[in-house]
Length: 429
Image (cartoon, rainbow, N blue to C red; front, side, top):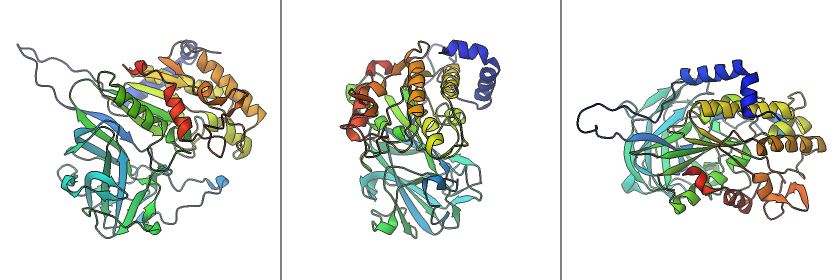
């Protein structure tokens, strides 16, 4: 198997291209220069990533999985209240809204934030308005993104922030995180300041729309761990709305352990995502740069992806090929790009999937080849052996029954907890 160093040597043109793209992206470093004099200047609070909602196109062709197109691709004269489970809290936040996949503008008439009290309700005493360059409304052009101004609101570590968006005019709603594994609320009219939202079945959604990132502001050092992957990182199989995805559980474990400087764990999982082919979002080699290296203050990354590259071609997309060498090359490219940006990258092994509809002996052989390369890689910051943590000792190609979801690919709450228990917390000191 090739090491990262050898892969970089033989693919020098790709690595130089990746470095150029990183420089062109204008990624912000963590350092700062002195100003001279007897006393250092007062330290400015810096944005730190605490939540991510990876977006894709709800209109993309996923009919091979019998997924119907959305009933509507616009919102109008409606309020959408979405709840984000933050990792690190703070006294100030800013929120990014995305229209990357829209074909028309997204005019946000009013946006308000408040602490969530659950089931579409908020603590109205904490309710504040978001502004955009001082204005309460903003229109996001097709293909565009916008950050709000920072706003003062005290959110605890592991707290839930409700973001209420009112759209008066027609707004393209195709830029979304399809499987949020959480419940959002949609209702007619301007309810952005309302204490509660209607909770009838027709008012409930399980996708995030437009909201793509949240930062808190911190002084002093902070570590930001981005978990990059597919539906196993996205939390498929875990209890809806219970924050039992593995990045949520890792964040909780780190907060309880108190490992020195604050640590934020950001979930950059996207169900169905692959390294080599678009569909269910940008292919991983491009998405890594946006959804890992673009996170404010990123210092560490955990990468676990490739099982869909292995399985999709077996059952659903036979013309979209992938082999073990190509998946390994994609992993190596992500490692190279991360290291070039000063990010400590950890690789995680691919978990078993026997019993799932796209399992095959050839696919299992491919998974084992990828995992062997991951386990023998000595040039990354570390390896987390999720495969060893959850596999059935008597049948290693299958997840242990205690840990697996009904589809035999995803994990249940106990399985995701077991994955997190296998991670040495000192890796993030």
